[in-house]
Amino acid sequence: MTASHATWVLESVDWDDRRAVALREAMDAEVSPRYAEVFAAFDAEVAALLAEDFAVDPASIVDAVLVIDASGEPVGHAALRALGDELEVKRVYVDPRARGRGASRALMAELERLARGRGADRLILQTGDRQPEAIALYESIGYRAVEVFPPYQRFPSSRCFAKPLR
Image 1 (cartoon, rainbow, N blue to C red):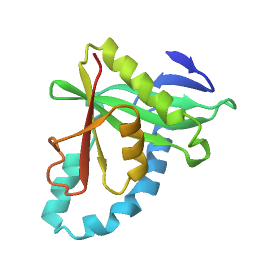
Image 2: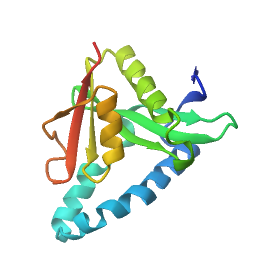
Image 3: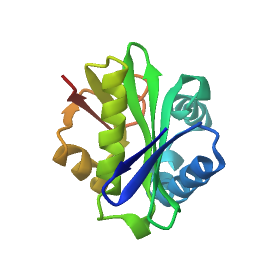
């Protein structure tokens, strides 16, 4: 399915869509260095547990969305995954060349629309304390801090948020 949102086209894709994979890799390349020293402080056992905590099972993904710019280039990615009885926002990323132009807001609005269509009463998400721009975005669109939920409690930099959809 494809939807238009002002400047952006939003395209539903499979988790393993090559464009989605490339955007997640770009996200990892940008964000991982921010947390390198945090992860370096853990011993091998805790690091392995954290890797499990942060792993995304593709079978748990219920929706993945790309933001496509006017030239047809994918510039953003986000997904919804089933986490217990809830839907969790995962892997929100917008390429730096598209930031500040509403792509992330379009992505989040689309995830909220999809979640409502799936009957969700709220969306939850986790980010880290070294991503102030992400926290500012989420708070500006109505997400509020909640207690850190599983599986993120082991990671001291975790910040969790939720937004009612009804």
